[in-house]
Image (cartoon, rainbow over all chains, first blue to last red; front, side, top):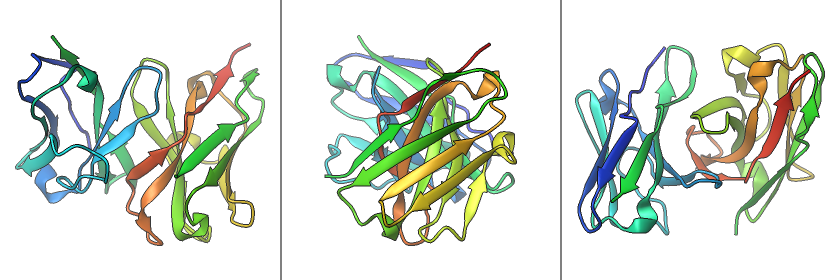
Length: 108
Length: 122
């Protein structure tokens, strides 16, 4: 099965740039999607197909991928960005979508 | 505005059955694949099952195959999950989600409901 590895936590000061990574074998060959989940709320799609942004998602959110690492970048971080972030892609071996374990972003 | 409203979650004993429903509105339901996902409170996300627009392509995560059945009624804009032989490790918040692809599923989830809680305990 295809495994996606995320750091459990990251922290960033307001106004700075947060980078949340998602590791997977040759992940730059896959379409990676990112979700934001605040406590008590359903996930929200913030990036799809590795680097595209759904309508309504601020330009501060962007995605990229290189080699074995996909990255969600949040610029000019705000207190409201504090949330869990999950990466997701397709597991071609198991034939189903797969998620990373999630990263809790703390805004200091 | 896309809305997905799940219902049917309950507390049940191991081995029993439960049927979840998801009422969809705000988009052309029969143009999109739909999915069920779940999350143990405080833990990560897991995709459970997906169904394409006309129900001829259905798939499941291995842990629920043979026990869960996903279905849809396009005349009622509704998605269902029949859950049989429930186990303690099925206990989770179950989300209904819309696929991001028009007609052909792309297996990312652009809208989610608020979830319905399934508790399995004796």
